[in-house]
Every structure is written in C-alpha cells, then in structure tokens.
Length: 318
Ligand SMILES: [Zn+2]
Image (cartoon, rainbow, N blue to C red):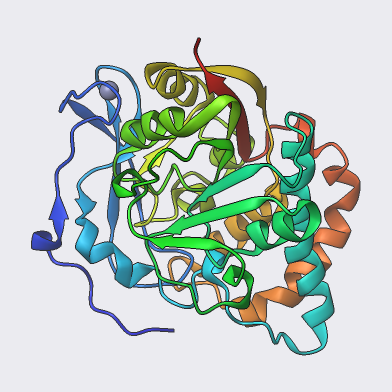
C-alpha cells in the first residue's frame, strides 16, 4: 500500500451540478477510499434542483492522478497471481469478451470499423477488438500506459478526451467502460462523442448504477462510490437525461454491463468489514473466486436483479 497523507482543503474545489449548473446541494453520503485505504473523507451530494448525485467538493484534476497508481484495477500491470494466474487471466479475458459480446449485439465489427475507447486503461479491450476483427483502434487515457503490450497496435492518446484533435476521423463505435463516472466534465465528453460519431455509429456507455440493489445494501461502503475517483453517481434517470442533453438518443438500455456485478457484491462486503483499511487484492483473490463459485446460482439471474451496473447504447439524434 502506498503511504499518503490525507488531502488538505486546498487540494479540493467546489463544483456546480454537472447537468443543470445549480450550486444548491443536499448531503448524500460521506465516503472513504475503501479500495486502496488511502486516508481522507470524501463528500457526495445530491443536486437540490435536478437530483444528480456527485462528489462535492472534488479533488482538483492535478491532484487526482496520485489516486490512480499502479494498484488501480483498470491499470493492472500485475500479471503474476501465483497459482491463481490462469483463473485471473480467464476472468480478465472474460471481461473483454463480455464487452465485445455486448457491443456486437448492436453493431457488427469488421476490418473497416473505426473504434475509439475512452478511458482505455491498459488497452486489453482494444487489443482484443483488433485481434478479432482487424478494426482500426484508438485509445485515450489520462494516464500514460503506452508501455503495456496491449497498446502495441493501438493509436494511443494520453490526455483528456475532449482536448484531442481527431481531424476528420469519425468512429463507428465509441466505448466508455466505467469512464463517465470518473469524468470532470461528462456533458462535454458526451457532446464530443456525439460529434465524433460516424453517421450510423454507436456510443456504448457502462457505469455503476446508483439506484441499484448493492447501493441499498452497502450505502457508505458501496463500491460504486469509489472515492475519490468517482465524480458522478448516475441513476438510470440522470444518465439518460445526460445523454439526451448531449444530443443523443437511446438505442437500448440494460440494467447490467460487461463488468461483473459480483465484484460489487464481494467488494461491498469486504469494505464493510475493512472499514476503510483498503482491500489487499492479493489476499482477496482467494475469497473472491470462492465467493463467486458459491454465488453462481444467484448470478444466473444477475441481469434481472439490477445489482450494480447499467449500460446504454446510443446514437446521434438525427
Ligand atoms: Zn442539477
């Protein structure tokens, strides 16, 4: 675990509602960094005008990168998990295969497809898309992970999505897998995505769902809070409002995603037990897979239980 001191008040900034601009808020929940156990308390509020839940104050952009260290799960460089390595690889590979299966229901991918993944992390999804379909793949992340093998064949851009210059390039598919809840300007991101879509292109967004079963179970220890990285907590209603406000329309809405809801079931229990001490993934990996085995009868119904995730497939409004 990385030793850090608690963030001081100068590291934070107050934000207005990302959707309606109101500064009137009500407290929602106070959270800790349950995932890594770094010190600090972080406040989430609800907009008094429109009901959007978001972190306020939030860490300034230049402060947040310290919270995305090498332990951060989406930036996983660790590949050696001892005897569980094959199981871990299978689980991670399955996550990318789930993403491709989800996307393929709405858009046939092929060698001429142009695919953009916003918040691409280590790039495993794009590497899989390229390997399977031969598509042109572009990835963006604000953390430079260009050293990873998966980003080898990827046109990787480091920085903020809406500051990239793509010239005349348009994309058939733009994906945001657990990106929008980290974003510092989600409406601008959604509008940028709309503008970058090819005529019949699709945007696929997956985020944790605030109005879900695991939120009701775990509340201040809900893994979807992921303080301080998560800036916005989307209910179904607010997510769809944001998409409409960005000039897109919904092709389909799913009360699940490619990311296993079981992770939230497991992590919420662990967070309640650990009370902010941080989850040691190397120790948690055994109970994680054991729990998954025990929960497997329940998880058959995962897609109907509204456990934790949501995805939206959308397109440009004509
Ligand atoms: Zn609002």
